[in-house]
Image (cartoon, rainbow over all chains, first blue to last red; front, side):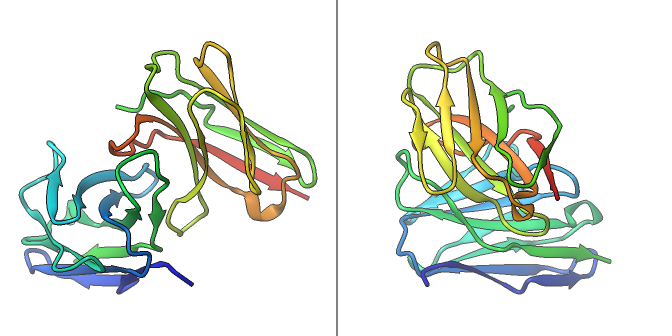
Length: 113
Length: 109
C-alpha cells in the first residue's frame, strides 16, 4: 500500500545533541510537511516543501531545519535539541497545494534527556 | 490561530450517529472546511472536506449551512474505533492546515 513512513518511531537524544528524523513516501506526492505535536496539544506546522521549494512558518525556531533530497524523502534536523523540543513529530504529504487532503505518517516521538 | 470553535468533548453510544458541530463564523468565500481525526498515538487521518455543498464519502457526511458559518460532521454508525480527537479546520486551498483543539469523541458500548 502507498503510504507515509517515519523512522524511527521513537527517538531519544541528549540535550544539545543534533538529531535527524526521517520521512519517506510512496505516494509520489509533490508536497511534504513537518508538524510538531506536544503532549495534549494540536499539531503545529513547522515547514513544508512544494517539490524542492522550502516554505518555513514564521514562528518556527531556527533550531529546526529540513532537507528534501528527492521526491520520496524528507528529513527534519534539530540542531541543538532542548527539553522543550520533546514532542511527536508528524510528517504529511499531499498531491499538490490545492484542495487536496494530507496523508500523515505515524509520527516519531522524540524524548530529550 | 485556528478559525474554528468546537466543543471540547462529546459522547456517543456505539451504533448511533455521532454529530460533531463546528463553528467558523469568519470563514471566507474561498476557504474550505476540512475534517481530520487523530486516534491516540497515531497521525491525523483525513475524513472529508467541502466548500459549499454537502459532501458524503465512505467514512462520513459533511453538512455545511447555507451561510457557511457552521458545519456538522456526521458519523452515521459510530463504532468503538471511532473514538478519537476530531479536528475541524478552515483554510484556503493550498495553504497550511492550522489545527485547533478539536473535539474528543468517546464512543461507548
